Length: 100
Image (cartoon, rainbow, N blue to C red; front, side, top):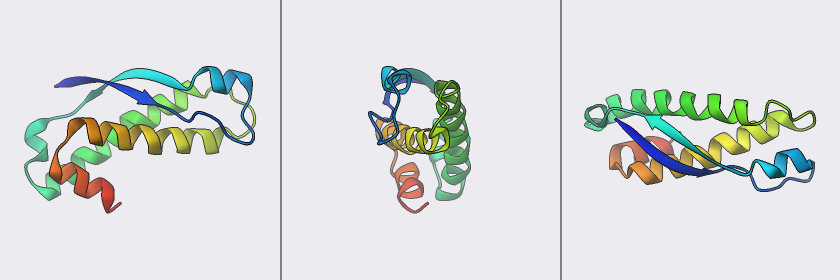
């Protein structure tokens, strides 16, 4: 199942560059299995799968960033993952995210 999500990446940082600020929002498809959200254990595995997709996309979004790239990728991943979990709206997935 694909669900298109509007993910807001990081808006600004103390070390932000114009190229970084220009890429503050993006859309991405996140693949996940609703059936895998049925139990806390399987939701934890699905969360890892979703997190990896988001992290890869955030890494790609900030490829050209020279200064503060690690910080920008981490912040983008955290914010985008939070928005993704909220958009999916599953209690087990939300619990995994809250307890990470």
